[in-house]
Length: 83
Image 1 (cartoon, rainbow, N blue to C red):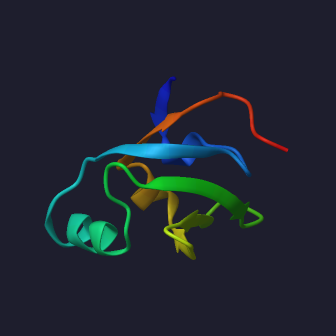
Image 2: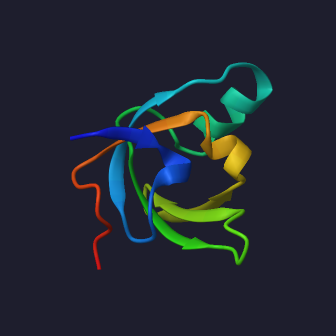
Image 3: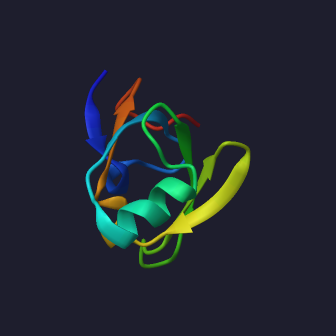
């Protein structure tokens, strides 16, 4: 299972967060949203210019800017998106 950046995930692709590589206020905010190692995430939608990205985590939907998604590493089961 390859590890990729959350920003690189395709729509409908799922994976498990392996690391959140940012500290301070931004790191705290990301973790408070439920984006912690071990959480499963699925990319649901992207805005027309690919920023922000909507994702599903812990039964809820949230959005992240690409600059925030860059700090999150995800282990995906497959490199191709699930239809």
